[in-house]
Length: 468
Image 1 (tube, rainbow, N blue to C red):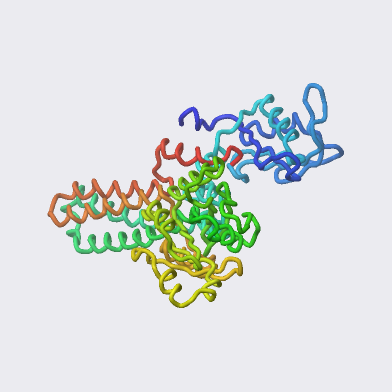
Image 2: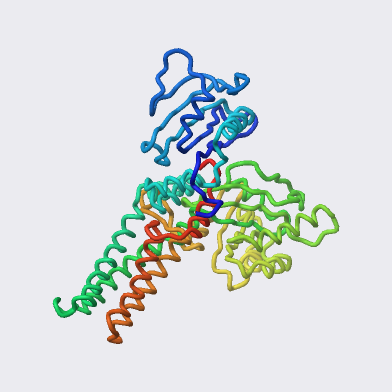
């Protein structure tokens, strides 16, 4: 392994999020052959408490030279192999905050441990056979889940629901490879290979790969979420729409145009998909320096968004200013929201016909809302899910969802199997069959970690937090 992912020695890290005056407990975790020895040097357990695996001890963490008490704490010992890493693991459960856990971590390092690299605890669990690679990645997904559905998907991966079908496909390919190689070595002693049967098996395997691949888009949305920008002229009700949608008063709402001077963010969940909603400043030409900065940020937010909600005022209809904004965002996936629909009754029929129903014909997603009265929000959410072509994700219909790395490996396997079929159809010797079949087997093995390179491990585990 590289220096970044050297797995020797005893490692230590803070395993919980820490912030001043937040969190009642902070955990410092150690893993390695010296973990218990370091704990014995630092932890004083009064009375006749027994030091044994999977028992919690109460006591004090002390500096081994000065005997100064650092914290009152609990100590949890988990001896190999019954631990997360299958090494000796020790956890100091300290008071929450910053100073206590940082002092304890420093003492651990001064007494023989080293600071863990990002993801090194989970890397050791993988290398020691406790987890496969899909389970390790699912742990990172579970820690970073932004919705209950994302957590359920991660949990499914952690339980092996993805690894099981991948291993089955790989084993099928290995069985076929064994049949082919047997003909290479003992062709005269074995019956002829049924090429049609082999091709049918490849078709079945490719079909199962396709079934797994269709979960990639859902998986990506569950992990990264959707960034949605609400844009429009000043005073069309963008902030009211955000407040009604998020059921909060995050955005200031007044009758004065230009109230929103900066991008206001809100985190929502729509149909199981995490959504980051950006309420932007009204886009217009202005001489106000602060508002001008807000307008420029609005334009940048719209350019970076996965989906744009272009909002207009129903009582004013489509204006030349709306057209100018539309020209800036029309290359993005877009939903037109006609807000303040409750004011339509105040318009004469000829005004409704002239203003309300005129907008660019290429806009095919339209939602009517009255944000001030909390009307139309469900229709907006349905339009968002339809636009991103994802049905509502619930725990009941979640089996697993692959990530980009896994999808790339599956595509490689599918391509290689298709190439084997062409080789068979061209009536080439058995040796040629095995080349692409081995590539497919290797690609499937990369998903679970049965065949994996150091660079792949570095790419995966470098994204983990240090304490995991």
